[in-house]
Amino acid sequence: MADGRELIHYDDTEPWLSGERVRDAVDHRPLPPAEETVRGGSQVRFDPLTGDWIAMASHRNDRTLMPPPDQDPLAPTVPGGFPTEIADSSYDVVAFENRFPSFSNRIGGEAGFLDGEELWPTMPAAGRCEVVCFTSDTHGSFATLSPTRARTVLEAWIDRTEEIGATEGVEQVFVFENRGAEIGVTLPHPHGQVYGYPYVTPKTQTMLRRAREHREATGRNLFRDVLDAERRAGDRVVFETEHFTAYVPAAARWPVEVHLAPHRDVPDLPALTDAERADLVGAYLDLLGRLDRYYPDEHPLPYIAGWFQAPVREGRDEFRLHLQVFSVLRGPGKVKFLAGSESAMAAWINDTTPEKVAARLREVSR
Figure 1 (cartoon, helix red, strand yellow):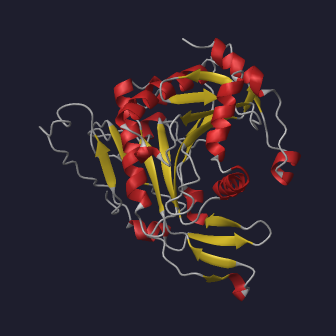
Figure 2 (spheres, rainbow, N blue to C red):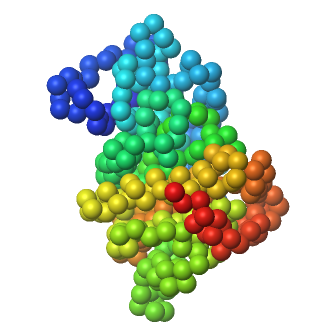
């Protein structure tokens, strides 16, 4: 890219797939070097009251927000048109370094203490943040992708998980998608992101602690026991395939929340076999389709979908790959705001029951 960032193509159509043609587009935008854009913009600070690391990313306040359709930065660059992040006039799937990353090895800096106080350790916001564009089409969503294209995206996620996981300083890789204005999406183009964190995230730390406690008490894997218990109960199971089960967790926090877990114990996406990957494509498209049909008016459901994978080094024998997808929409046009109890105390109150949600998701099968 013009500022030195990396862009990777994942092609599934001709003439690119066979190599008959080679991508040779040039990014002519007058951008400053990526190091200048992010330099001094991020730092990670330790919260002594919770034990969490918090990223301060001031340069992200200038990122693009809901541009007009003819200035979509994730669209292909057409001759004479708006120069986008992808210089080619067409593409299948692409991944590229985020122009406004929360974490980047380009940011620089050293570990230390804020104001010289040992209470507040700091470290560079090292790592990697990438954008993954599912399609060059500016409309639609992951749910509207063909199975072939969905498989290409899955393979891109797997490749990026492996590459980013091998990046210096990265401790955990998180593949996720934000969809819908209610979620806070800044670009409507169908896309997701991949974060390489310089620490193990707080939620993962909590799950790992619980998994270790469960192992000490029972000798078993907590994630496996949860999946087996949900399958035995059955009333919160949405559907099962040969290799995956989708279910609403017994203690769901969100108005609509579904987990999708493999039947085999695997730590991350790269560990899936070819048969499991093929099965996952159909299962994930099925699940997202049901979510879009969840409300009677078929209002496309805003959601966050995140793949929880084992950290790069820590707890790989305890953690288990699974998807968590949830929505803040508690009814058509009704957003569940995280008010006092949830935001201040992390004490969750759900406005429905997991059993009702699962029943509705079974009803809207096609």
